Image (cartoon, rainbow, N blue to C red; front, side, top):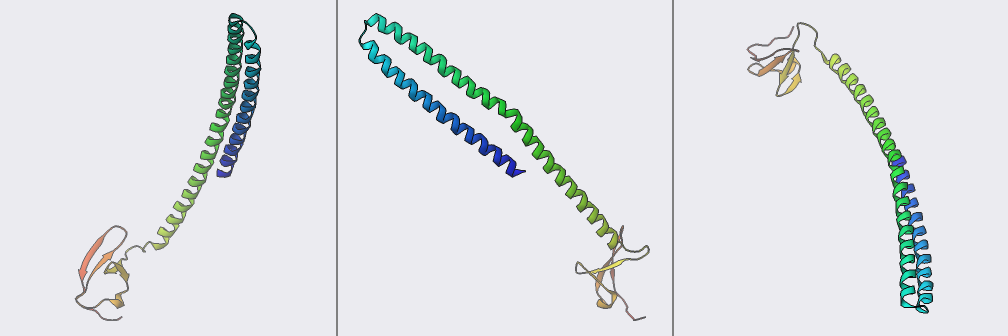
Length: 161
């Protein structure tokens, strides 16, 4: 789940680096072209040089605009796939957690059922702990609990059966 996400992010980073390298190469070539054109223009009249320079600048601007648009188009085309993969990963995680929650609820219900007291019986609680009748002494204050009620009592007598 997280591995797929990380792998996709690495792929995107690799594509970004490739695109960046390609753009640097193109930029280097354009700079070389500009230097060559500048040398040629130095030999021509100022008006002619301005016309040629203006044409080259416009051509370069269109080229850069095209490259930038393509770069944005590529990135934009990746977004739906990324969103879909994120949605799928989140849905799988939620499904797994819901399944785990259902299992835990079932285990809790089983545990609660096993701890239920039989009808018409109560549990003796002394100092917040369940104890047997053998552990209480005359004069102790204890609580008796069943599933619905709790009663505090004082032990007035005790005898074995």
